[in-house]
Image (tube, rainbow, N blue to C red; front, side):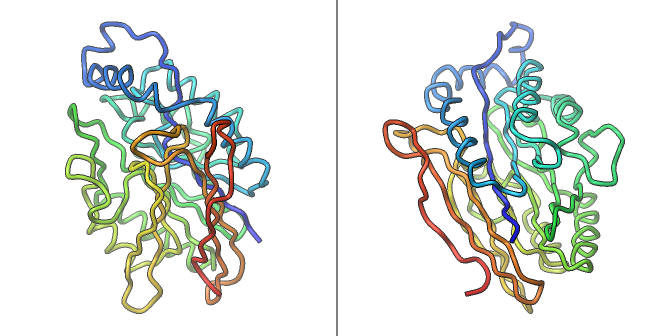
Length: 302
């Protein structure tokens, strides 16, 4: 049995010192939002509790679907690199970027270079940049395919983008993994389903993504962005529908509009014709920010 954990929307804090020059951009609105809202609701103590509990379940691998930082400041990007290093090796963690990791032009490439070991395909040795997606990693019976929906956008916009170049490569990688009999996991930050996010926050290219998935197949899609624990399904004509799994932000405290922090643990076994897959949700509850088992879902099999 292979155990795959899923975390998203880490939003590491606190913010490092910010210069006026760095705020002369979209960052000024994000900085105000951080000071008024996010810094009160996102808590590194909660992230640490969640990660400790996750590690106690001894997953074979962990998927992280973006938004490690807040304003994509150089200091934040370095802090996130150190956090990744402390959390797990590139053999143990796979990462795709989110919109906050690409907050302003140029930030995404800097983040990709800093976090490259966790974003690089198995056969790749060149420095990672925003053109290096999707990537392909094989861990046991699982293929992890990392797609980037991250792009710098205007103030008050947090949209994602999935275009033809990535679509063509994604189809090729899905076919390759399918031919090897692997359990295919697609990692993406923005939810590739309709009505999961508002018009200023949604993924542009949902129909293209779903077309590729219907044609080439996949077993599960993992995403973040909405800070909500959700399960959607993408229907296919001749095969089982594909579950699309969202999750609460890893640093979210209790008492806010959104659910407190969670991670999911998938237990995967079987073969392509008879996968047996369950998903257990673990989350924060109680004044001590302790982590508890919340629910279990059977995604494949009985």
